[in-house]
Image (cartoon, rainbow, N blue to C red):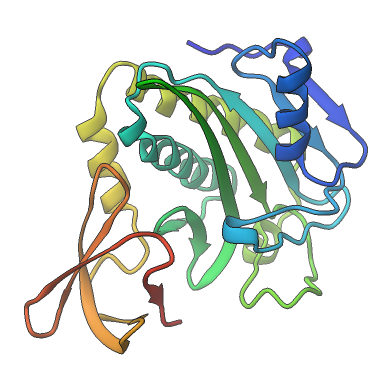
Length: 249
């Protein structure tokens, strides 16, 4: 199992991207599993497919974690996303007493607002995962957002409480380690069940949009490869990869 100690934390006052910095370090030297690159101010944070991530200096958690899940076949790499998403919502519940949900595939929501995002970059060698860089942005104490992101929220905005960043980080890393151990010990069905039960808009019919336009559907399943299955009002199953369908908020 991965373990954390002081040398595993690489702290920077400012970085463009913690994921980019960790990738650079991997090219230069051996980096132990569980290593964390963290910064108080990320100036060029990235979300999925090039989306930007706004984060005020000294207010939030912006970091990248190195995992080496060589026990997972490449086609199961989405389990890392599931595990980290579950760790985030568990941390929010423990720290802020707030129920968060996972908006497929791995945005973390409080009601209809986004409190955290995950960007995972994988390296595959042969028939196994070599390493995963897990980039996490969690809005903790930021009180005002100025970017054009449509629906950000912080834990402070949601709870009227200021949080100690180090405590939140420690709790989150502990929860990631627990979820990662579930994967290591092949408890994938437990992770599947917990992830599905934690999905945003899991119950009932909701509006979605794909290349053919708007439709209503309910969430049926998320496959081990991360594909989303919806069932529309005519009872037809529709399966989507990431970015092929969007929630209509």
